[in-house]
Length: 167
Image (cartoon, rainbow, N blue to C red; front, side, top):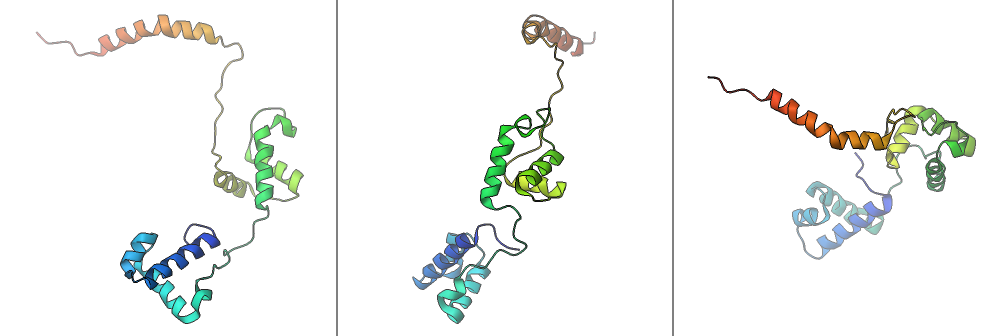
């Protein structure tokens, strides 16, 4: 499995590890300092001995290139932060289908809804379920009721639940 980090970060870590080895540090010590397994350090050392600095070079990320570039993802984030109404929808609720439509309209790219979800979680977004509230809801009256009546009701309910001593 590929370790986390960009190709450049991983290459920098390999070069740092080999530099520590060349300074005389042991394999286990380097592994602990760099945050990898001793086996990885041994592999780096073998690559360095075989190919020199070129053996430590970063490798391209495996898999297909993303359809949206990093700049396009930033632009998508800006579009989503503006809200659904600013993007032509009648309610303030983002759905995966709506986001996929926005991506298609602005970038001419089709994504499956499951991939839209993966992309959103990678950008730090999470699922939010809107609270259902009546339009006629009176927040001031609710706050007053909670302050005046709720403590009394709560106390009487907890007293009723207490076990009574037997005689």
